[in-house]
Structure formats: structure tokens, C-alpha cells
Length: 275
Ligand SMILES: [Zn+2]
Image (cartoon, rainbow, N blue to C red; front, top):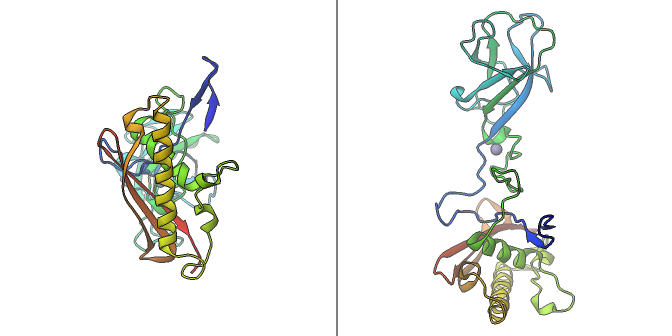
């Protein structure tokens, strides 16, 4: 995404981090912690103890709790500790829940220790849940969205992360009316019939060609404008395209490129085809 920088008036690039693994820490990027923040609850008006999910009061907790130590509660924006003398609370098993994603999912409910007769207080609960119930990542397990820096503005990616983003952009979204040889046909492959209209080798070749084109364009660009060696493709080590073992309509594409600083940048994505 490009935004006009209000301070300098020039164009600045605020980017998605599309790397799967952080090249420095080797940790997955964007993995979701399944933290549910400030979910709203109401107190049962019969026992004055049991919390119900405000969005559906037939439920107690909306989702299973993963780690009871991580549960926190606020009443009218004031944090309430478990051992609070007036509003102390406890977490107990909730066996009467039938809509589990997995049979092994264990539900709990939060209950005040003593009856709490507040008139419509705002009760909020934060906790960790499991992937199948996560509203933060919509149960897909990772966050593929703009990330805010701690300063509040968007993270600005550079170097290997920027190279990975550029590579994926080149492969996935390339279109150019003036230089059709720069266009990667991958988008037009989505939904085609694998084995009849398309093979996994076609996908592999399309990605390989797109990355080679990007490499040549960067080399040409580098003759007139100095590029960061970490933002330039030196070699394309491999490109693979394989039908996913668990789903014949999913092609798992992977590539490894190296930078002029000698580091490796893995790229990967999935695309859907018909079987
Ligand atoms: Zn999640």
C-alpha cells in the first residue's frame, strides 16, 4: 500500500510483512496467540454469579479458555483480581456445552464467588482460546493484516521482508499493459482444472519466470539507482509447486531466493485449483 507522507509530501511505502518465517529469529511471523480481548459479559440474574456471553446469553464463556492463569476481568473498566473481596471470581468447568469444534474441547465458565448485584455493569473478560474459536485470526491461525508499530503508525518493512513482499507481489498480482512479458499468469490459473487445463509444472514455471524477470529488472534498476543488497535477488535457489497431501485442490508453492548479502528469503503461498 502506498500513502502520501503528510510530513515530507513524498511517497512512502507501508507494507505487509509477507514472510512466513522471520529470517533473523527463525520464528513464524504473524502466528496468532488467539488472545480474545475485552469480550463483554453479563451476570446471571438468577444466581447473580455466573457470567454469560453478552452477545449470546444462552452461552456462558463464548470459547474455551486456554490457560486459566491468563484470564483477566474488568468491571466498568476497572480490573478486578480473582481474590477481590467483593468481586472475586473463579473459573469452573462447564460440561453442558454441545457446540464444541472438537470433542476434546473443554469449556469453562467464570463465576463470581459472592453474588454480585450490580445494575447492568460493563463486565469484560480477556483470555486465550484455541484456534478453532479465535475471533482475532478467524480460526486461520495467523494474522495477515496491517500491523501497527508500538508508536501507533504502520510498520514500514525494509530489506529481506521488503524483498519477500516484492517477490510475492510480482508473482501474485503482476499486471502491465505496456510490458506484457512482465506479467505473471498465475492469477489466471486460479480455479482451473488441474491435470487438464493446468499442471503443477505450469505453476512452478510461472513463478520461476516471474522471479527471474524481477531479478533482471532489479539488475537494470541497480545501474541507475543503488539498491540495498538485502532488497535484491541474487539467486533463485528453487521453486516448487506441489499438490497438498490433504487437499487435491490446493497447490502449495514454495521458493527460496537469496539476497546480495548472502541471506536466504523463503517465499510461500497456496493457490486453489479444481480437481
Ligand atoms: Zn487466533
